[in-house]
Length: 195
Image (cartoon, rainbow, N blue to C red; front, side, top):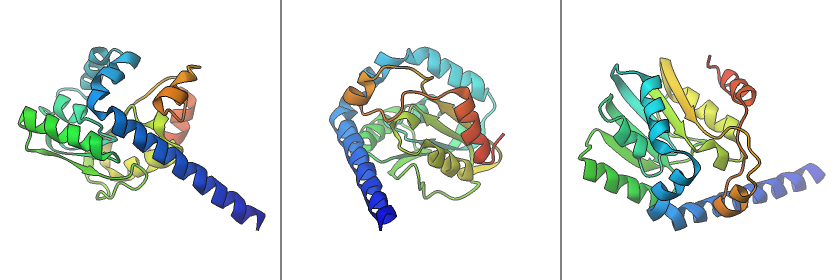
């Protein structure tokens, strides 16, 4: 009985976290690009993403936690088809507008859960998770799900914060985690069956 009550309380806390995160994204979807640029100089990050992925085209991209769909537009010259997944209807509305404005017909976005992507297994050459993990209660689970969507020989590209002590990000910006060490990420990646 004690374990059952603890599990019920844990589920309630996780629901509350998810609701708070959803409310945060609903409130900030229209201003997301400006808010994101407060944390990191996006031009440098985007240049690094393109450099890491190289110039060779690939067939399929999955962008987990796509937000406004920025990576779908950034990498449009590299993929044949792309899918962006996000939990927030408001962010997906912004992403659809961005894709329409860019004239991208090979990319689509849809609502989904990063912990249960609902995508075919082994279907994507590249999976990206850009500034998403620090919002999650269970980043390792999201990485396992992303790894399952990767085709053999595929690449998982993760961009997130290094460990920091900026507590205000929890209170003001719904962050669940204050960054990740290389060792922590390596452990989760290896546990997901990736090198």
